Image (cartoon, rainbow, N blue to C red; front, side):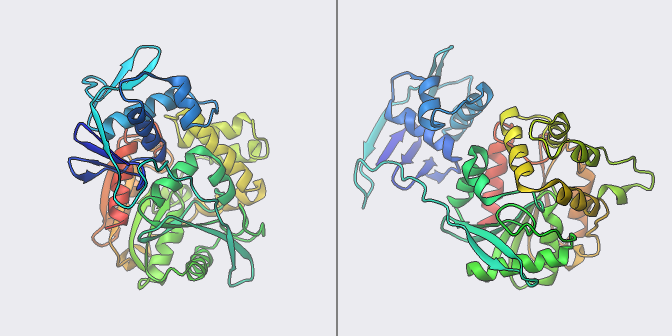
Length: 393
């Protein structure tokens, strides 16, 4: 069904939103909120109903609800001051005040509901040294491979947790999105081996082969840039473009001859094995000082479950002394670097070194202190749109 309001069209059979004839990239929960408001245009939609229908009745912070409403407003060309499309009723909820008309989508039933996401299918392949690597593919479109921070993600928990599921769904709206767990973590074999980025790059190539990815785009997050840049140098014929989010050239031990002791490593040693540890929360807060708190805690819970303390400590030591400076001039594909202006873990100067060293690379500075933008950050929507447009060319 196509729903027309203001200068927008929301198609709930194709799961798309357009404004003035142009596609708008919308996170799944934001899409669901707009759809809920459209179906109840002119009627008050309470916050309790939003929580029930969009978050499945789970406990949700006020900041998460407010951020979702703000993103919905921005997506339909509205804002909190004008409220020409979505109006707030103080302390009660919101309503869609623009006039809505509808028509059946060609080739679809008029009453088609939003399609439920298919169950995630985790598959396995083998690394060169014989370890099992878990991977999963979501969505349809141009192929995109994710290089995540080594040992800090778990395919199953990502699918179960709301924030990570929304990231996956956002990418799957536009791409065929391939994720994998590094050996030693997540759903992959929990083997303890030294962190070597050439080995990690070969593991990524094995995953791409198993998934049928020949030539593809890639996105790296945080320390995943080390593996991604190694892959780009080793397999230039396979990588069409690369986005680097929160990346860096040198580990902290290489940045200064008199670098102080690594406080984050101490936090890992003291608290990684205890889910409610104040040390573990301090580690997460260093990466996400702006929160929101619920999303930050979700990232921490998954990371602790994905990686045992001994692996985390070994990897931390390797990361602190790592460098990719020798690889930068070997990268031949288009590169987009996205980095937080006030990142205190890997400062903006590291992103500037990446951009200066990689031929033709472009840098986009994000207005946040979070190492990676979280839902609720002021830059969340523009970050997602910029990333999706680059990866899908």
